[in-house]
Image 1 (cartoon, helix red, strand yellow):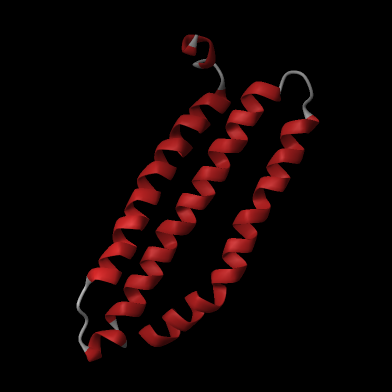
Image 2 (cartoon, rainbow, N blue to C red):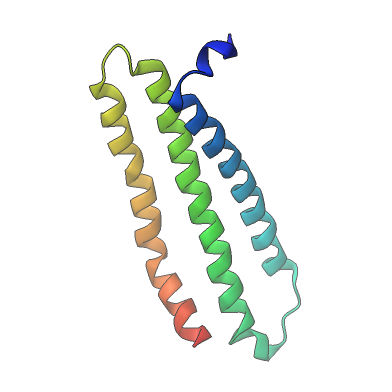
Length: 117
C-alpha cells in the first residue's frame, strides 16, 4: 500500500518532516536534560547557561514546526483530492501552536541573548 504514496509530494514532505521532528524532539529532550543534571558554577550562569538555553529552545522550535508540518502533509495526502479547502483550513489552524510557542518563548529568548552579550 505504501507504494501508492511514493508518487505524492505530500508523502515525501511527511517522511522528511516526521524524521526531522523525531530527531529534533529527541535532541531537545536530551539537551534540556543535560541542563537539569549538570553542575554549573556561578560564572557559568552568566555565559554558558543562556547560550545552552537558546540552542535548546531552537531545537524545540524546530521540533514543533516539523511536527505540525508532518501533520499537515498527512492531512493533505488523505483529504487533498476530495476537498482542497479542507487541508488549507487545517494548515492555517496548525500554524496557531507554532505562533503561540514562538510568542510565549520570545521574552525568554531575548533575555538569554541579552545575557550572552
